[in-house]
Image (cartoon, rainbow, N blue to C red; front, side):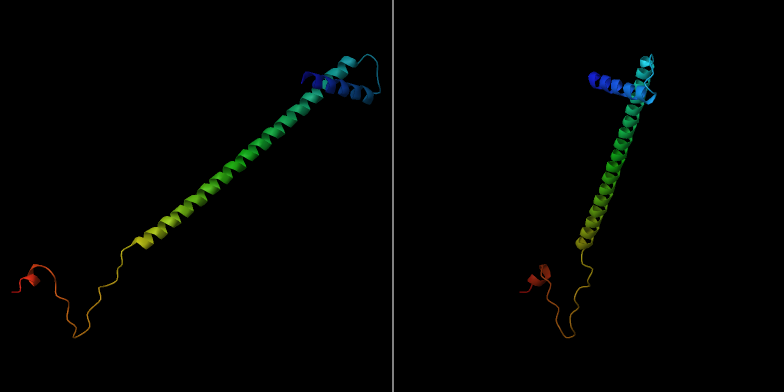
Length: 114
C-alpha cells in the first residue's frame, strides 16, 4: 500500500523533526531517516513472522511424527495381540482313563468285519 507507507513516512518524518526541535531545512534528511526506520521495523516484523511460521511448522511436524509413532506402536500392539490369539493350541490330547476303551478307528480296517 503505497499511500499507507507514504502516510507513515510523512508522520514519522514529522516526529523526527519535532524530536530534533523543529529545525528548518532538514526535511529531506528527516524523510530519509523516517524511511529507514520504517524499513527496519518492517524487516524486523517480517523476521519475527518467518520465525513464528518456522516454529509453527516445526511444531506441526513434531506432532505429526509423534502421532505416526503412536499409531505405529498401536498397530504393532494389535498385530502382536492378534498373533497371540491365532496360535494353535498346544494342549496335549486327553489321555484315556485306566480301563476305558479307546474308540475304534474308522476306516478300511474297521469296516472289513464280516
